[in-house]
Image 1 (cartoon, rainbow, N blue to C red):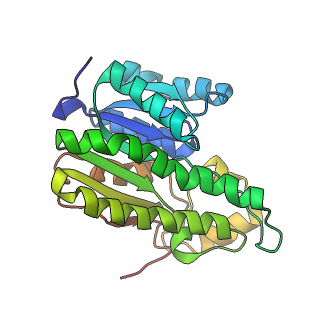
Image 2: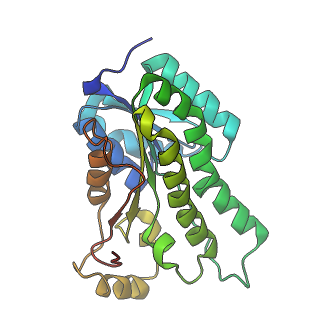
Image 3: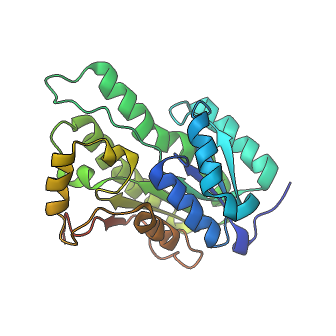
Length: 253
């Protein structure tokens, strides 16, 4: 079994094939981390594109299939990763989906599918890595929430509830692990230039951009910089925090 040294901590990024996930994988690898992207095996077309996009990083980034909504599948995948590469030092929960509908039209299936991925998925991965992290005396967990978990959004009662829940989970776990060398933090992106936002009608996207003080959508790199900062070895005094990266779209004290 390979071991993770401070200069090459092993990082797992769920939703690693997504727009934000790929950017996070790239910047973690650039920071010297060994990165494994965890995502659905069925996304073969996207997996091929992911490998092309990160080809310049060589073998610093690899892929492991798993459905984050499945507790046992997560456990098996994370065990395979640790058997191949050593203990997981960094976990980034970036997997997420949308199932938008106003509440009066939302089906139980739309509610349940989203919660299983966006909130249960955070439990399913953290539950399997936290014991190893605390035993080794080091861990960095970064959970990706959303500005809409802070502000709410029309047609997203499911999404807003899950993303708000992500930070509640973060704060509670941060208290449990703070004396064990494990930090747990949240990054809350605003609207970013990803396929998920590209699916929004152009007129609505223009309205969104008009409401962002910096005058543009975010990029995956903007979010990844925040993740790399919180995942650093010397970021041990930051835990239970929520770092908004939204171009000023939502500000709070």
